[in-house]
Amino acid sequence: MNIIKFLSLVIFTTLVTGCASDNRVLSVSSFDSNNGKGLVLISFDDRNLFGTSGMSMTVEDEKGDRRRLVNGRHPEKINETSPSEISFSALELKPGRYKVIEWVLYRTEGGSSGPHPTKQFAFDVKSGEVAYIGDLKVIRVVGNGIISDQLARDKPKFMKYFPFLKEATIVNKAINSGWWPMPGGKKMDESVK
Image (cartoon, rainbow, N blue to C red; front, side, top):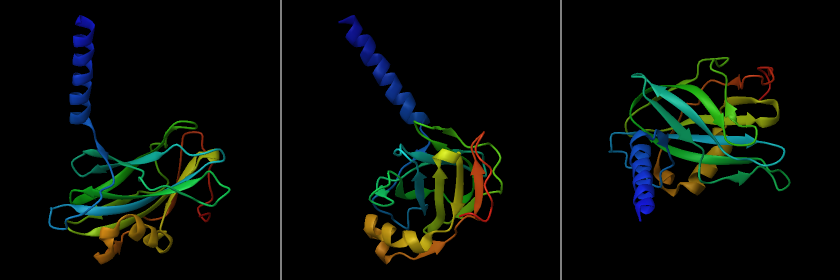
C-alpha cells in the first residue's frame, strides 16, 4: 500500500510540475481573433530516408520567454514512396516580436540545430492576425534545415486541416530564407531550396 501512495505522489508531482513548466505550443482547432493573441501558421517538412519522428522550433520573445512550436497533427507523405512527411501547424502566440533560436529533431538522428543560424530568423505576431511564417524543411541525412516561403504550396493544406481559416485573411510574413545546420551538419549552398 505504501508503494502505491509513493508512486501516486511521484506521478502527481510529475504532472503538476511538468504542466507548470511546459513551454510547448500545440496546434489549435479554432481561433478567436478577439482573444488578444495572434495565429501563426508554419509547415514542418521532415525529410528522411527511413521515416520521420517529429521536430519542433523554439522561439524567444522580447522578454526572453521561450516557446517550443511543435510540428502539427496533420502529417502528409511527400509522395507515395517516400517516408518523408510535411505537417501543418496553427499556433497561438501573444503579440510581439519572436526570434527563432533553434530547431530540434526527435529520435533517430535527433538533436538540436547549431546555436548560430546563417541568418537572423524573426517574425512579428499581431493580435487577431493570422500570419504564415514559412516552412521549416529539415534534411536529416545531411543534418541541415532551411526556412523558406512555401505559402502557395501550403495554403490549400492549411484550409483543409484548419477549416476555421476559410474566412480568414492570411498575411504572408515568411521568414527570410536561409540554411541552419546542426553541429557537424553539411554546409549548404544558399541558392539550394
